[in-house]
Image 1 (cartoon, helix red, strand yellow):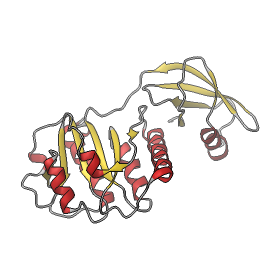
Image 2 (cartoon, one colour):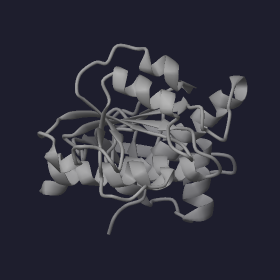
Image 3 (cartoon, rainbow, N blue to C red):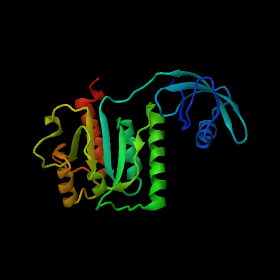
Image 4 (cartoon, rainbow, N blue to C red):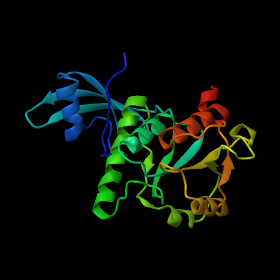
Length: 244
């Protein structure tokens, strides 16, 4: 039986007695109805995990005692950065959640010309913090102990102006000359996905000038909430841990 898993932002250490963060405590006691003495798994996003025990439950706090650190990881050998144009509604939450389950290494939300939702200032900061929470919750569910970073929101044109770094840079295009399977195996990939309506033609030009190569993933046009996940799954099958 799998033990309940909870992410704790503060650094954990063997033998420590800690107050669970309020959202974690609420979920453990009010949703899962875990009693004192229940075994759980805690992780702090820095790698590995701790088997722990709920020591006591008080009115406004839940105290857990930590056991030994366990060197348990299920990270993908394929390092993928998803550059995702901001999607409307709850599509962004869905994309981030499933991308984490599929092993994405980091997520860069960008404001593109066709992004319906526009976020600036404090509102943008709050939304990024929310998305980081979505990533952490996905790690709790799927067994990852390293939480992918959700970078601060910025304009796509600004991000494209940065140095390319290492690895393959890809955008999806149904009419591209090469299919994903035609490319040589990669270990580092940056995948750029547009919002509803895809990328603006000028953004596609800028992306290609920044080294992004168009590839096709079948002959159909994929919706924004489908594109990244289909591409991630395909890359894991070709080059990553879906191969076994």
